[in-house]
Structures are given as structure tokens and as C-alpha cells.
Image 1 (spheres, rainbow, N blue to C red):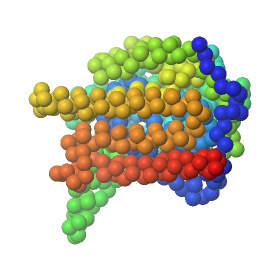
Image 2: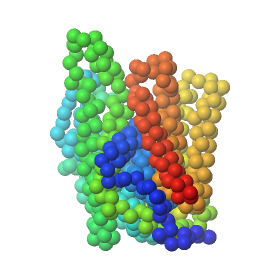
Image 3: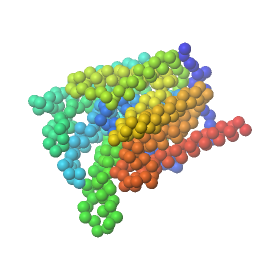
Image 4: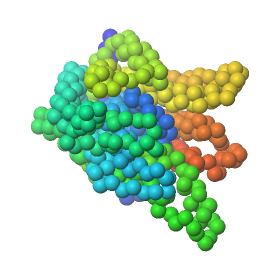
Length: 501
């Protein structure tokens, strides 16, 4: 049985004292908070880079954006916009920018190898990755309701264009006979010191053609100006952000080796030991998260999320069955040996249908998948990596505690959060309240799951201060995110109390 709201206008939450979203102080808080949310979310997921399966990154950033720029939309509309962005960002699982980073590889960690061709590849792949996220975020906030059938045909069209782009721009690829595409942004001959790896196929051409096709559809047929503008914003932020993040991660190689000041030498030694993958991912996400906040602030007149009809078109039991199908697929991602070559293209096609098209249809037409994609599915792999790390050199009792503290308790917290917010969505909850509560719960949970993986979870623990990871920065991010989210929620709560009086 489908559920319907009374009318689209009833979805708007009328606050008597709305946030002054045009002020520079609001812009500053939005940029800093969203950048930190994106950096925290992306930084804690770097161990998942080896898993080419849906990771749903960017949950905290998407929630922060809807909290600031869709506060009066209904909770379900805000959740749909955030979930659409998160699903679109999962396209980056197959863009494979890691192979382009090999062009910069040096045998010694202190050597800096700058490669112009590599920067072109990084810009292109980063632009495509974040461009999709911007497009679908705009689709969720522009005030236009996308139907289930429309989303299916959009995804099908993107898949066809993806195959066409791969055939045109990423073929031929045969490393054994040294046949490579004309535009190949990875290493053709890998040095022995790098390890026992082989040249990898690239699929950026498919994503390029698909993104161009999506932009044409949004501009010419849907007249969705916000989605088009956020697509261009994502392209600019993704390309420049990934290049700048890489430069920031290798800047340690530019520090002089012999300094006269002792503390400077200690800083240099610390930077040399820094986990550059974690640092690079955090910088990259901070840049595009802050940039999206600025772009939405500039395009506020195009944000009409409160006008969207948030009725559900999918029966609740169908929504639930689809969720039960998605869960084991995500849980098994650590144990799948993914194919290469033509078989990988077949897998990508199946992946697009099962893990992108179906979830998107459930998001635009349902309720249960919208919330649990944001909360449950996006957190399962974080719990899984914490569990695997805690199993090293652990006896049976320690493994039992690991299951309890890194899987059972966190997932129960997430299930309770999702269930509570689904219930509140029937009570005319605002997008501001939904996003603020979600950030208050998820931000510290993500940070805790991340830090244990490196054996020094809490401030003051032995070795915590000089850990080669960014946990101390992540805790600052968590503190800022929670304070801002609480204030946003509290001010709305106070506003509603004033209205009652």
C-alpha cells in the first residue's frame, strides 16, 4: 500500500526564525562544517580503496549540505537528496584513480616525482567522480520530482553510454602485446621495486560519455538548472581537489633534510611517517565538500526541495525485500575476487543494475531504502574493516569482544537511528532536524570505528600523539560537526516552542 502526503506544500517546515542563509557568517560555518564532514567520511574509508564495490562514501557531507541548504524541506525529501548523492559518488569505485598515482611513484619516500600527464589524468578522473555526485545532489534539491521509471531509464542510458565510451576511448587494451589506448593515464611498464603488479584497464572514457549524456538530458529535456550547475561545480572541485590533495600529500618530500631547529626535525619526521593515503583522501574530500557548500550558497534561489511531493510510490514490503537483497551483497564484498578485462566490464554492468539502478529507484519512490542506504549499508564495511583489524593476534575471547563492540553494538545503534528517523518522517520532521540528528550520531561513530583500526583509539593512549594517522584531526572534525549540528537542531526546537506559545 502506497503512502501519500496531503499536498506538496504541506511538506515545507515553516520556521519562524529561519537561518539567515545569505550571511557571510552562515557561509563560513557551512563551508567549514561540510568540508570537515566530507574529510572525516572520506578519510576513514581509505582502507576500503582496495574493494571495488559500492562503498557509499560522502554520507556525512551529503547530510551536512541538506542540513544547511534544505532545512525546511521534509525529512524524507532531504534524505532522498543525500542518498542520491551518496549513490552517485559510488561510481568512483571503478574510475580507478589509484592506477594514475603510479605515474608519480618514486623509489624513496622523500623523492618527489611530478608528472604532467599524471596530473591531467588525476584531474579528469577526479572531475568525473565528483561530477556525478553534484548532478544527483542537484536532482534531489531542485524541486523536480523524478519518477521511478524515469530513474530506471536514466540509469540504463548511462550504462549504454558507459560501454560506448569505453569502446571509443579505452580500447584497445592488451598489455601482453603492448597495445594501449591513445589516452592512457596509468603506468604501462611498472618498475620492479613497485611490486608484483600489472598495467590495469581504464574506464574513464565510459564515465566521461555517460556524464556528458546525463548533462544533456538534465539541460535539454528536464530543464534542471541546479543539477547542471552542481555538475559543473563537481567537475571543477573533483579535478582540482584531487590534484591539490596529491600535492599536499607529497609536500613532505620538499622539507629540507637537515634543520637547525630540533622541533622542525621532529615535525619533518612526523610528516614522513604520515599515512599519505589517509591524508590525501581527507584533503580531497575537504576541498569538494567546502566547494559544494559555496556553490549551493551561491545558487540558493534554485533550491526548491521544500516544494517536492514526498509521497512514496513503492509498497513498504517491496522496499524491505530490496534492502534484504542489498545487504548480503555489500557484506560479501570483502570476500570476492573481482575479475579483470572483459569479465570486469560484465561485472560493472551487473553492478550498475543491482547496486545503482535498483537503489536509486527505491530512493526516489520508497522510504526504507532511503534511510538505510545512508545509515546501515554505508556503515557495514566500516564495521567490517574494524573487525578484521581487531582479529590480528587476537585470541577467541578478544574476537568475541570485537564482534560485540565493532559489529553488534554499532549496527544496533544505526538500526535504532534509522528506525527512529523513519518514524519521525511520518510526523512532519524537517530536513534540518533529520540531518542534524544523523550527524550527531554518525560522526563520532565513524571516528571511533576508524581509530581502533590503528591500535590507539582515544586521546591520551600510548603512542596516540605521534600516531602516523590523522585521528587527532578527525576528533577535532567530530567536535565541530557535533556542535554545529546540535545548535542547528536546538535553534529549530526553540523556534517551534516559540510558535506554540
